[in-house]
Image (tube, rainbow, N blue to C red; front, top):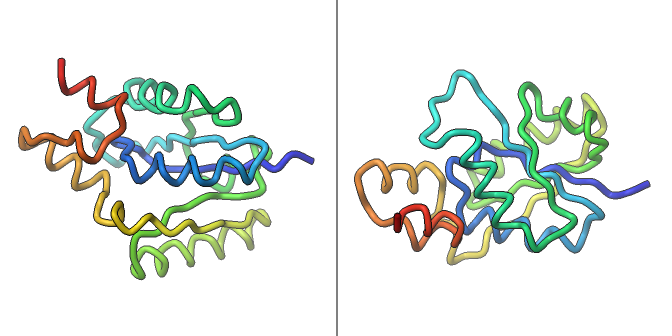
Length: 155
């Protein structure tokens, strides 16, 4: 049975922290699906299409990584794609406390295990929320986003 993992998120936008987690996790799995979760209650800065394009471009060199959009419960999407694992990045103790509860529900509901990757110390302050704020206020996000997005802001 292939080892399939899901790395879920809104990735609005994807950051170098996200990229680091996927690249570190890739050797551990036969396949990683980056799941772009759609939440109709949330207002996104970038369109789903733009985010999918950036993520696909960023991981075009990793044949084991693919990107899909999904709606609804993450654990249900795991079942749909055959993923037995969820990958989550942790930047701090509050991240762990929040993610731990969700992981326990996912395990109880569908038997899906969550693997936590600690963010590299230099990347721990980076979050999509802060990067969005920089962008909204005409700041330069290039130190916090991958090359596929940097080119977008140079246009």
